Amino acid sequence: TQLLEQSPQFLSIQEGENLTVYCNSSSVFSSLQWYRQEPGEGPVLLVTVVTGGEVKKLKRLTFQFGDARKDSSLHITAAQTGDTGLYLCAETLDNYGQNFVFGPGTRLSVLP
Amino acid sequence: DAGVTQSPTHLIKTRGQQVTLRCSPKSGHDTVSWYQQALGQGPQFIFQYYEEEERQRGNFPDRFSGHQFPNYSSELNVNALLLGDSALYLCASSLGTRGSSGYTFGSGTRLTVV
Image (tube, rainbow over all chains, first blue to last red; front, side, top):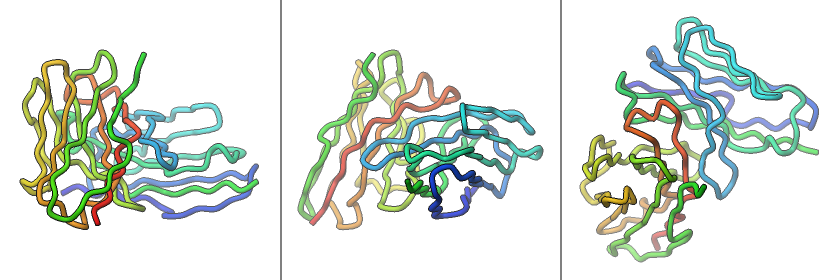
């Protein structure tokens, strides 16, 4: 069974600081997605990465997929209070894209 | 364009009872997946429905069952509720089972079993 690990589990920072959260797997990802979940809401898709070494930017968020496709990182520049939430990575369990497996998430708190 | 709609938003049930949760997928989506999210954890995959059939199933007992209707909406049924079934139940829709374009999640149903 492929397991996803995310670190850190919790992160509390001041507004304006930079941060990086990580997602790691024991096996090679077929594809990886990052989601953000706010309290009382469902996860919202941020990005999908497929190719090893791929880097995608979404405003202040930078997503990187490891060359070996076993790890990924999310970097936030100049964090804002609106970035607060649970950041989840998810990957397909098999090559047919079925059965997404989620990591446990990183809970980020950005303080004013 | 409506997203994924789940009902009810909150529910309180007693141990041993049965519950039915409902989900309407995003317009244009034909696949519905259900997840259980315990407090402080990531979502756990329950099962996926496509063309009115269960296509994939996670590690959940037979007490968890589902259905998909011709209009692609779906129900999740849980029988003989246990205290440990208390969680946020999320419905996610996608176009096709691969979900390669990502899943669209509803806001979930918060189930509390007392």
